[in-house]
Length: 193
Image (cartoon, rainbow, N blue to C red; front, side, top):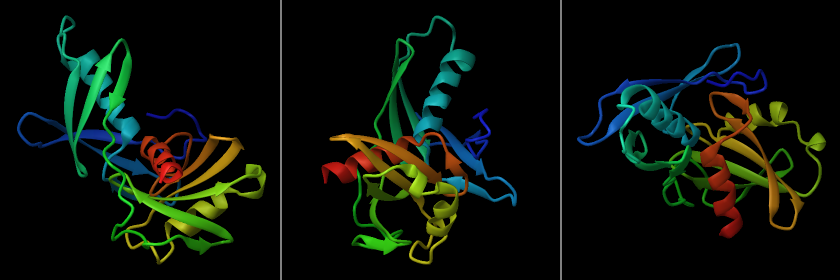
C-alpha cells in the first residue's frame, strides 16, 4: 500500500480463483474523492508486492521457490524472485488496440502516442520542465477523453538528456501516482518503436 499522500491511490489486492498452477489476485485502485473504484487489468508493481507477500507470509521460511506464475486479467505473468530482487515478464507491447486510436493524436496541445502493455497507455514526449505540464490538470482530461472507450493511463515523458527520461504518471482510476511499472515499459516501448 502506498503511504505517500502524493501517490493518489491506495490499491488493494485480493485473492481470486486462478488457472491451475497459478495464483490469482486482482487490484482495485481507489482514487481521491469522489471515490471511483476500478479493477485494473494488471499492475506491474502490484505483482511484485504479491510475490513478496507469498515469500514472506505464505511459503515456508526455508522455501527455495524463486519462480511464480500470477494469473491476471491480462493473462499469466511470470515473476522471478532472487536476493530480494524481482524480474517480471511484462509481455510484448501492442501498438494497435481497440482501447486507443491507431495513430498519434493531438490533445490539449500534446502529441499522444499509444501502446498497450496489457492495459492502455498514452505517452507524450516533451523536452522542457514539468512546470508547464500539470499532471493533475491534464491527467483526468486525457483519461476520460471520448477517444478512449475504457479510459487510459497517461504519462508525460520528460527528456532530461539523451536517452534519459523522467516519467510523470496519471493512472486511470487512481490519479497521479509516483510509479507505474507498465507505464515505464510503455514509455520504453514507444522510444524503441
